Image (cartoon, rainbow, N blue to C red; front, side, top):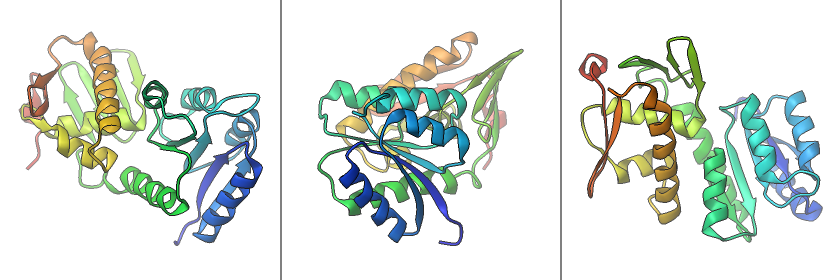
Length: 237
């Protein structure tokens, strides 16, 4: 790997944390290990990281709280949660906060590596071939800055929100099939990813309410369709 990718790893189980750090460093990732959420937050505001891997149950500050605080200062950095919890509510809560992926313990280090590589590939590899901005009715959507503007109001989007909205816009006035969206953004079509995509669709609908002419429609049995007045003008063949 030409450039060192920096990972912030927060794991209160020091033995597991050290094993993960050594493994990721052996694979070429510069990895900083913190054993609680407060230390993780302090490290994040001091350094620049390409990806965060957070245990959910940590002392001083849990992984969900840490992720929420980081999302307030950086909407783009990918976040992967590690947890012993298997409740659907906990997994969905992670995605609501803005997680890019979620792994339940125990897991194999090889699977963790593959998921990290998939996240980084998604974040870095898709932007060059896509439109970088869309005029959606009264909204201007800047995919590179991951933000929506309407009048003087600027709304920051998470990485997942921005990727999903960009995919919808690239299929404007046409059906975006659920399976295609899941494979493109989450790499896998399964129950938890499908549920998390529904959460993001709901969030986007709330954000877009400022312009009633912009609508994300359900297409029964197929997927979603975004409609806005000047959609055809944005389409690039």
